[in-house]
Amino acid sequence: MILGRVTGEIVATIKHEGYRYRKLLVVERIDPAGSGTGGYIVAVDVAGAGVGERVLVIDEGNSARQILGGSDLPIRSVVVGIVDAVSL
Image (cartoon, rainbow, N blue to C red; front, side):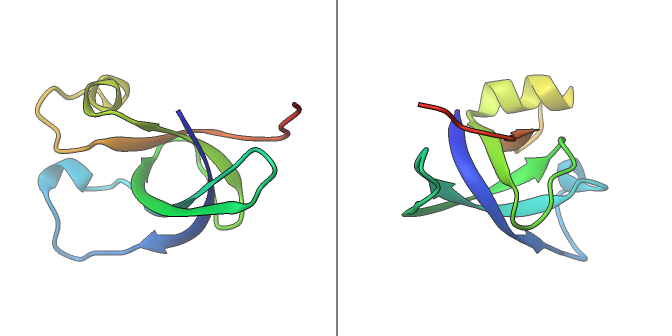
């Protein structure tokens, strides 16, 4: 799992059928303290996250397809949770 912060949304009028009716988010990778680590991910949102929220992302295709219920979906990353707090 990856800890990240939502920095934006992606809107596309033409996309693969597997992405239809799904919200795509740009997620910046962060460390537990909340500092950016320099990478980002485009992920399908199933948690209802918005810009500025800390989230958990699964970045593995088989897990993503199981969550979304389709074995032939071209989806690798899914936002699966909104993080309230991180304690170390």
